[in-house]
Image (cartoon, rainbow, N blue to C red; front, side, top):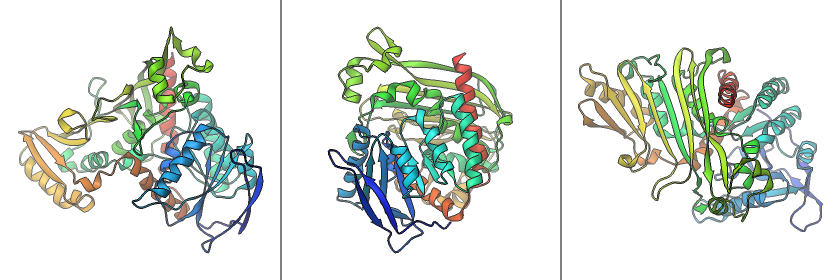
Length: 458
């Protein structure tokens, strides 16, 4: 995909205590490079996109944001990547700070891709403004958090198609190697058989994730903005983190297939809060009191955050269950965890991340009988799995259970997955199109989370 960007761009720069001024930016010798504009970076995922450099991306990042601690944290993370001793980045920053940051970005358009990760309540309006202006969108999940937002998203995809630009959400979990391995084995009928239809008690696929408010990112304690705990801004858990889980259900059950909203039938859904004390809230946010806008969610002197959710639904006739749980802090030596099972006619593919696995995601294959299953797994590893994940071995745990040992070189961690997703997105930009299933499946994914939200709220 070719990009025409003026070799002389006027960017308004307004820093802390600085006067507004025009900054001349001269294009380098590669005018076709992708140029990133980061809008209102309120979530640390915005910075993780820039944890690595990309050959196809210009080294200047254009940042448009309201002045405040969120953008300051973003800039400090970029500086830490630039100054680290191992593989430092070379990002250059052009900032515009002001209340009219969105209008200024649309008017100036110094780049061709808008990166956005922050307040989920505003995200769909940012996306709409960008595609109307002929800008590509690279957005952290979720794109929408309520039924009104979903209606706007459908319109935004139509406008994006008319204007020849892309909307793409950052699905990092597709690049977690254990999940990728589960998907690979599910596509081998000699080992997995065919996926079962399942039932409400034993769905064909389950995806569960446990997260924590207090955690470390890039080696530093994560400071979350207070609005992160406001479900009107961040969205409830059932429409936030479950976006990843619903995406994986689609991606694993029906690889490279188009899924329509008519393929979805919501069976039941529920939501419940995590309760935080002021002491816990202070440790995560740095604030010594609850802001007034959180008073609506107070129960006495404690904050109730509706960040937990669970959905049971049918997708193309298969039962699926997804659930997300937020705790305050993980026990020492642990972190966010994931559990999953895919049920097939010949075996179950199970991901566990508990104490027995040293809290590292681990894939198990549980056979359902049949002869020579050792040979079947060995052949699958030699003929299929080793081409993508060389060095992977199977360790027999019991008569019908095998543990799949994946070399550490493939276990790069959540933060590094942002670079992998970005490389994928850059390839799609170069090709000028997304895979034919991506857009309809994105729409169906958000249709699913919103249907679950509506049912849980009844």
